[in-house]
Image 1 (cartoon, rainbow, N blue to C red):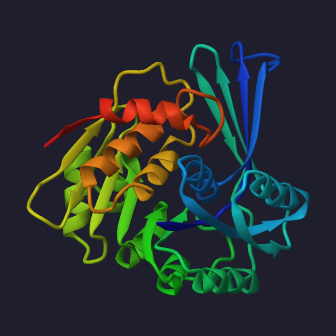
Image 2 (cartoon, rainbow, N blue to C red):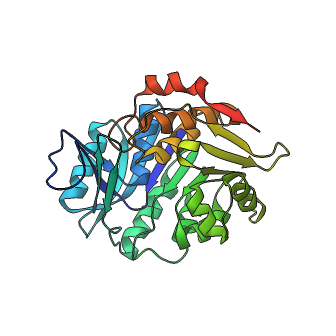
Length: 298
């Protein structure tokens, strides 16, 4: 199964591991990766053994660094050259698990750059196209819907805010967290209720997954099985940044005909990511060990 991962808002993702937060911090571990949610999904999927391509708009020195990093990782990428310097996102995590995150705003794009990205997506031959991240300034109205319609394969969407509102109807799979689902629906509630309501209020997706951090994730489909909770084993997970992207990678690289297996693999991938520094940096052997430990509840 082939997968194209589109980074809607690429970044250089930097993780600093420090003894404690506050004052002058001297990290004992530094991890830099080509980031933004889409490139994180690509890296995790590649780590899990999938055939992966990546696409996005990148610019400046940071953009060239991202291109080199993807190539060095063995990920085939078709990148549009942007006029603006690609942003950076920084996560600082203390040894006790406390953390702070500093994310620069999405890098603006032009109409021509977005049109070029749309052409890349339209020309790709992939079973799944994952559209992940925040919509950048300058993207046209309905931009994610346009990308989804241009895609030749099934479409998975992981975004938020106004972009999510316009994207849901175009997606085969929607993967968002509980806060994003509540904001979209305008109501709070447990993840299983949010996922069910989202599926019921749109004709687009065949599968909705709402993640809930260490509590796992819940999936609903358009059959009569009802919500399925996938719960990870209890682990000392201090590095959650990138776990949602790793989850989506696990979901899309599993057997699509076996939802139970896909959910176990997805939750295990997210959990494995949270064990080590770096967004969507995970050990595939650890993921394989954790997969059978994921509990499914209906």
